[in-house]
Length: 297
Image (cartoon, rainbow, N blue to C red; front, top):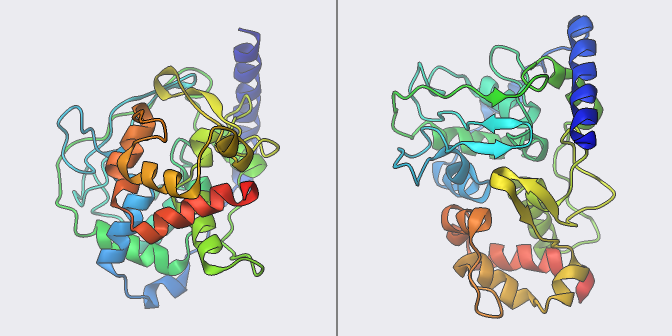
């Protein structure tokens, strides 16, 4: 209860400061370089799988249409609803421009200038290159329109004050592109991109502070308080090694959902595999496993 009270007070303070100083927050400028790129639909669809778009924005258990809006996500802050991402011009993103899409994905800013809650992992997608954005945009433009209104976020006060997110972004979000490690080989860098950016593994497997920001001192150390009251185990190299994982076993589990002891990964991770990593190439799965296990070798 004390932690919740502190979190409420902290976010209320952020919201108040953000409202007072709202004029100091500016919308990211347009990126003219995007307009000169040709998007690859197939690559964009693959990247959408790797990025978890289908898993979050499709209510599969409820029989929902692809990308027409996800199942409710129950969190300590309230209930989040992933919106409609189909080409419907009224309820989806059919009326968006490429620049709107880029600002949303890489900066967490909606077309109307309002900030998104970090339940949308733009804090990871900010690493996407211009070509990534062009490819994703090309793929999303092929999604059939579904005229289904997006549900409103149902958050407790003061988290419902969206203006508070502007100061949250100032404190905890830094837009930056993915930079390959010059000392790493292609496999390492591909794994880093998939784990740290597209796959946003830290979103579930790294603990957060009272205001929902990642604890940068404990990367991949595991986390509680996930949607539905679940938890995610630590996946840093030391923990994986201690639990008997190898690169081959981890890559296999990301495809099949089967652990080294024959158990099955369920819950949120089961959805990640069913709608995301299960579609990735063997090379990419090995890159992910190699990157996570690097320090254990």
